[in-house]
Image (cartoon, rainbow, N blue to C red; front, side, top):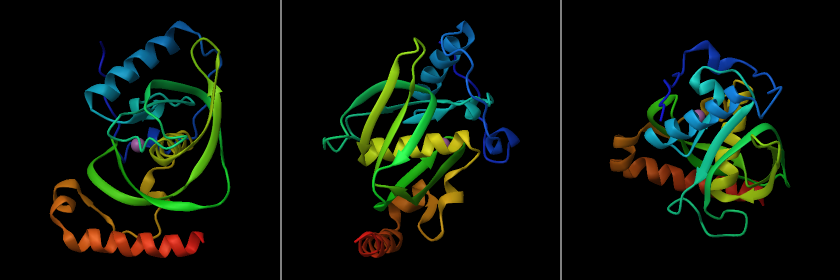
Length: 192
Ligand code: NI
């Protein structure tokens, strides 16, 4: 088991546009993926992109744990998964606000606008296709991780910074959750 050091916001690797992986089956890529699973579990986190461990390549890992899954079609429980050289596209233009955190921005959480439903594809370390049309948490985490490969951190997706704060504070702040409800309603009407 190897837990890698995670780059925090401010490190230039997080702003890079990452390069495609030339050989997904290469030994060093398999080792990187294994170490990224270990690092994600140790953190613990729901996803991790290669630039977060100082490797500017187009791959990320993620999982949808039982407490995250809504159980809806396209948002089932998913074990540790790698997506190499991913392609992602929205399905429809409906969006929603989702609470997100990032291992590169420790301690903070924010409500971030994301597409409700997406389709993505890529390959795993055996070159086997990985493809799905997803919604809910699964759609949110894949959009978040994919953004890392283009040097985008979640605050760069936000137009309104009021629903952002330290986890411990948010847990206590009724005002913030009320504001979150207000934003949900605004977005619901926007999407309709
Ligand atoms: Ni992140």
